[in-house]
Image (cartoon, rainbow over all chains, first blue to last red):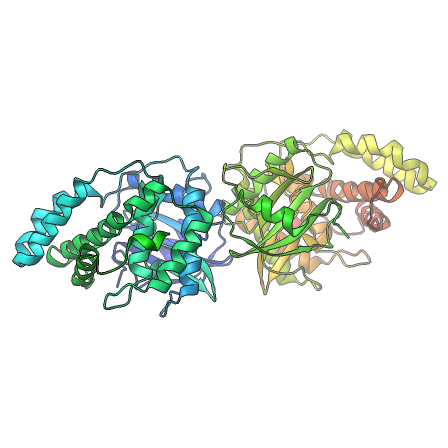
Length: 316
Length: 316
């Protein structure tokens, strides 16, 4: 569960007096989420999500808050931070940085088909285009610098094969000479559980707390690696084609992006293999969550390296 | 009907390429509204309202657009202008200034009871508080200056009693010495048909195109004059009490506001009597709408002047 910091209805009712959201009707802890404390908040006006930031610092939060505001303003269905009477969206509650955001409608999907992938591909491209006028910048906290820092911390826990493979892949990626690729604000974690569906339409994209400034193609690769793979993992070509064609119809891929695609799929698989290894072998003190299986992304990466999946034609 | 400027699906689809709203699914003209051309627009992302401004000029629009954005950001259920890929919310379409806004849910009420008035009173106070951090200013275009300008234009159409009463009331109002009253952004037209209800909750406040910077109490008086009167018109004390008590619980009335309340109710009745007379006797060329009955607000004003309704205790 993910209520790390308890908030009572009395505390929240007092805190809400600094907002124009009406009065508190109901307060319920949210079980999902591993980084922050989240509550559903119902007021006389509507339903919101209260987030207390457990790990991120107050100075890091404006990038995320302003990005969500910016994207929502452009029609991307993301939560919108609500401003208080002083026109700020960040406050403190029970000693933690806290914000209240609109509650986007919908639920995550259990079964993904090609139509969903088509919707996600177009939505991701729209997010990238909408984000191009966003002026704040944030270095990717899980980029090549982090890979190199995490590598020696996790290899002691790995067998020889995995350790050699991981070292070789980090080495391959950090030494890649990449052409200039289109870049801007990316979600960087657009997994199935971060997209809520309101019947066949996306009601909301959530969990922007890995968002950063990086190449759009990397975001596409992260998204394909989740939405277009079976649990084996095995690439579902029909889904991948649907996602990439829809993306391309909104923001056409450049020649440089075509050339980098196979490497980018590997980079996206590496990033989650490495972070899952890290969370599995080096859990944060007090972490209450079962770490996810790192081997899934290892197997995906093995397929990419062996070219067991047809990579380059996917973008065509 | 209120489609003064026709937009074809082909024109709109091309225009929408400058936004991140997905592709056009459906376009329907909206019959309501007397000032602008409005269409419901359905895209693959959701439902929006396209507005082409027929009377307001492009330079006047930022006040309204930014006010709606500001209020929505504070949790007030108002339409939100959607930004285009250049991050602007105003464009041109078929030669008119145009914007696309989120579509707020709900429908206007046929029967108003005290519970609705309580909700509206609290909402209006929340709007006033939320608007206090709004920095743009707009003089009331239907304030005392306009009353004085419109007076000689409409009196030729009136009988002697009405003409004398109107002159006396304008004279009374412009010579009132008013203490400093709390002021800020006001809606100035919060009639029943501008509030959409999503069951018992307000889904949206619409039609901000009379919004301006003026005293909050004037906005309260306009609202009471619509929500708390029977068609006679006769004041419904239960509804008025509910609205004012709820407002007061969110933003307490000051002593100066108590003192000015009777005069403000008269000012609010005068403003709509005068504007309805103007629209009735001096319709704009090409106006397609039946002007509303001016006599309703004349009768209301007569009651206020005669103190046939108990005014001052209403705020207590």
